[in-house]
Length: 352
Image 1 (cartoon, rainbow, N blue to C red):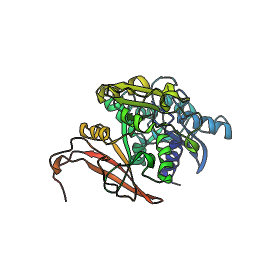
Image 2 (image 1 turned 135 degrees about the vertical axis):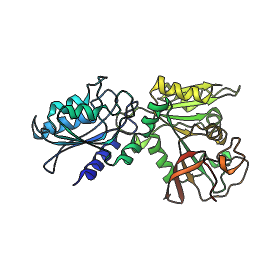
Image 3 (image 1 turned 180 degrees about the horizontal axis):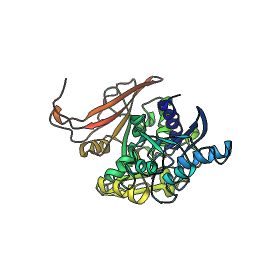
Image 4 (image 1 turned 90 degrees about the vertical axis):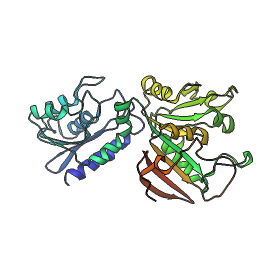
């Protein structure tokens, strides 16, 4: 195997930490010597050993205390070099006597960014950077956004008809999409730290906004349920989000600016990524004001018509201002089609 193959192995391991490491990023590590994988690790939760230390312990447990001496360590993220809740991983790597460290992505934390290579080189370790960099950066994009802006990564999720509507009658239940799509939404919820919705949605649907079934990871904390409301009509105190076993994970913000709410979620509650499950009014506002980063749309094979759009808001006056989507990924799920894409923001000339 070459460096890229081992880094992809580290990426696979890192993904076990998605949804459970915040406010830290998910990281994976693999230790190799003479073509043999000696140890692996991934960051399991904030305050627990980092991936590098987990891999070193795994190698020592399987092959002896000096197993990593002279080995190559593959890391999806630049190792930390400062003392926090755990010690600096650069020190652990130097003390272990590794010969070579291969890094996927630079750490966007200003306290660490770019420093590890110099420290490791001073310790006699060869450093290779940028292997499978795109995949490693995608894995930490929510963490990177928080480090650079103080705002969480915001994903808008919606299930809609082919004519862009979410119109339905109460007698038909809450869902337009099929059971396969709804099961995948549980997986999406397991990837984020909070779910954002509106008082209007709580009053209409009485949602739970929890991770359920096989998608709930071991020891995973349920995401925060964050409700925005500006209505004088109070929220029903008998609602699931106020009465279930996770009622202490519900936060209500009345009449506050979205930016203030998002920044408080980061600073006070460790939220790095956030899933929006709401009606067209809130979705439209988030798009109008530019707070969203990603969309996940489940297109149901229906034409509902009616007055309720999946995305409302003020919209834009011309094509030049319209939000473009990048990195489009389509997948069929039973009779539905899922679109997952990154919002590119405003663009230049429209290319029709």
